Image (cartoon, rainbow, N blue to C red; front, side):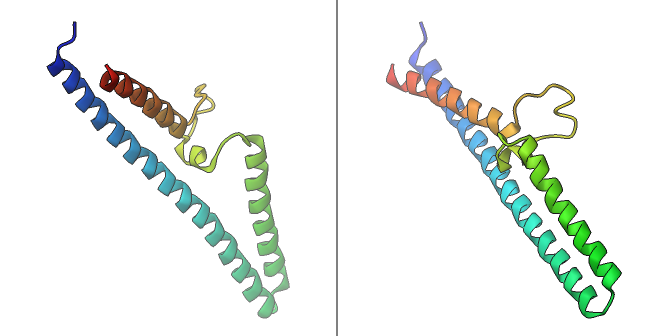
Length: 128
């Protein structure tokens, strides 16, 4: 039989775990927003570079820059189609070599599962 003190201690531990996991998920969410913003900045900078080269009359440099921009955008979209089930938050949670090592889920998915497990356990403890 579990005493009230043990139950209360477990409830406190679960609440602390939930706070830590929610902070980790918020960190991943911020990283995903930065990733998206970085991509937009990259596209904007490349567009400015293409414009500057075109205005300066350096057609080969402008064409090369346009090709580099197009290749970058196509790579991102092709990669996104290959892993279409991944959300942006999943992309930032992957580590290099994760696919090679057989990791089947991202860090964000793992955090979501841990939050769900702890919330379920917490509800059971508070309900009893």
